[in-house]
View 1 (cartoon, rainbow, N blue to C red):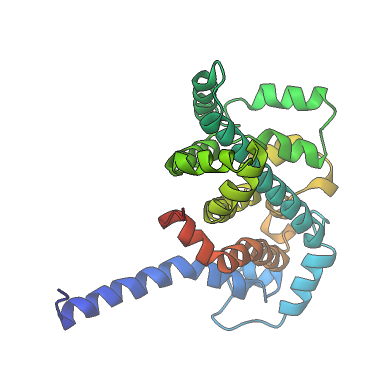
View 2 (view 1 turned 135 degrees about the vertical axis):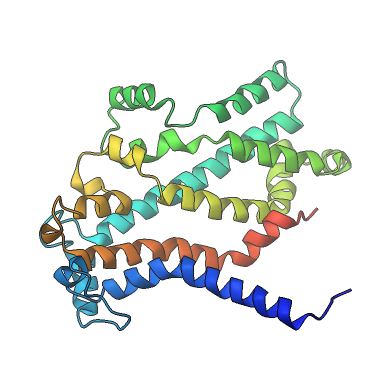
Length: 282
């Protein structure tokens, strides 16, 4: 039963509106600041009305970068971030699907031991094992490369655990029926399990894409060449030691550009994302 309380409804909407304003104001300020001169932003002369430098700031950000600090164009840094985020997301999902499939549907000695070893890696994030990981990547000659940026972040115990739990909810009769029909393990995996896992894969892709896009510590450590900078690293390099040496207008424009790809991914895959989190099609 839904009770009609106008006063409670009014306060609920008021709190919701205030919360939305508080959350979105930094983004609105960044958007407005991206249309002003850097000196105006540094001196706090940004108003709630767009300035006149918007097109120039965004053009500079995309083609050449900030005037006084790093000169990496945002277009190239966005490409690096996109390659890193997509490779990490696809790689994690692919490896996790196969490992979960092996753990659930194959009976081999040490099967549960393998699962618990994978599970224990949850307690060893990259930040904990960063020095040995860096040593391995350095010895393999993968510094300043896309392989060095992505390979150490591809393995995912979390995704393996999620897919394992999902596969365990699939009726075993389905696997037996496929076996009776002559389907091999790979055909069963590709033709039956993969279609059933589409919503889970889509939801996980959104989460892992944002995870890869926002990576800061590992790219900062593994790359020294400006050509391999991701947009998160590039924005940090754009900020000089002094406000007068920072082209804040271009920095703000680059920030807005850096937020667009994750937003587009979420908007485009929103239906699949929600469905994958709350539903399981079998």
